[in-house]
Each structure stands twice: as C-alpha cells, then as structure tokens.
Image (cartoon, rainbow over all chains, first blue to last red; front, side, top):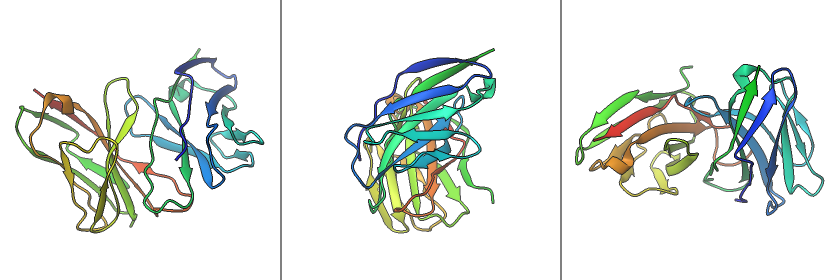
Amino acid sequence: DAKTTQPPSMDCAEGRAANLPCNHSTISGNEYVYWYRQIHSQGPQYIIHGLKNNETNEMASLIITEDRKSSTLILPHATLRDTAVYYCIVRSLYTGGFKTIFGAGTRLFVKA
Amino acid sequence: NAGVTQTPKFQVLKTGQSMTLQCAQDMNHEYMSWYRQDPGMGLRLIHYSVGAGITDQGEVPNGYNVSRSTTEDFPLRLLSAAPSQTSVYFCASSYTTSGVNEQFFGPGTRLTVL
C-alpha cells in the first residue's frame, strides 16, 4: 500500500473550517484514501473514505485532487471536541488480507 | 452489539511474566488485528487475521503470539514481557478483508511492564 505524508500538527479556531492535508504521491489506481481520528488515547474512529470523487458525510468532507496524489479532509465547523490526531491511510481495494498501516498522523488543536 | 471489547483495561506486569490480552467482537467480522501505540506515536500493526485459523505478522510481531480459533476472538499473548512492551494495545475488526470497509477499534489495554 502507498505511504502517506501529513503535517505533524495544525491549529484551528473553533467554528472555522479545519483543512487537513495528506500527500500520497505513490497511490495506485485501486487504492482508496481513508481517514480516521483518535481522540485522546481512545481507539481510532473511522471518518470517511474515497477513491477519486469528492465525498461528504455527516462528519467531514474529503477532497481528492484530480491526479489523486493528495487529499484534504475538511471539518466544516470545527469544535473543541474535534481536537484529535487525524490519520490519512491509503489501502488497496483488492488486497486479500490487507495490512492497514497507520502513520504518525496530524495532531489538530481546536482553540476557543 | 457490544462492538469490539478488550480486557483487561489496565495491566501491570513484571519483566519475564506472560499474559494474554483478550479481544472479542460480536459483529461477525472476518478481519481482526492488533496494534500497539507508544506515547506520542502512531499505531503499529503487530499481527492480523483474515479469518478463523489464519493469522499473519504485521510490522512489529516479535515477542507476541496470536491465534484465531473462532471468528469472535483474537487473543494476543506476550510470552515473556519486557519493558519495551509497555504500551497501549488496540484490537480492531472489519467486516471483510477486501473491498471498501471501515475498521472498528476497541477501547485499548494499557500495559506497563516493570
């Protein structure tokens, strides 16, 4: 599976949009982009995934560039409870027995 | 559904002791895995299983054994605990091993080895 690169930390003001970037320049055609987050030592929580189209759910939006080499997770109105570590993961659709590898992630601080 | 459950929540061991961390899921998921997370670090994959009777190594398997005799349970065994194994251990499961699906994580077991 392709590797990802994320900034180690970011700040965001409460009520503003948080835009978390992820670089996955070696992504291949059958690999999806997944985002998870981990709030203060709890187990990670799934947020969203996508292949090449932009995706939106009740938690966030995912914007994937046309060449698929990078993506951005958008939390439209960040709250203090969104302070967490956010992980961007790339994983093959077809791997039989996949290994989901987590990197270091981005630590997002939402400030009042 | 209880989801993914882990026991114990906390454990303190002495160097050389052995123990088993328990993980169970009631969602009939094929895929289960174990991760460890050291302070300030991301998760590292220890072992995973794609179904009952099938296990494989992840990134950091040394010092750990696993087995998968049932779909529901995936215990992690520390054979001879070392201080380097002090960490938080997370178990995860997902419905299938292929296709698009999310992983569900347990609450974690916080292990200290003295």
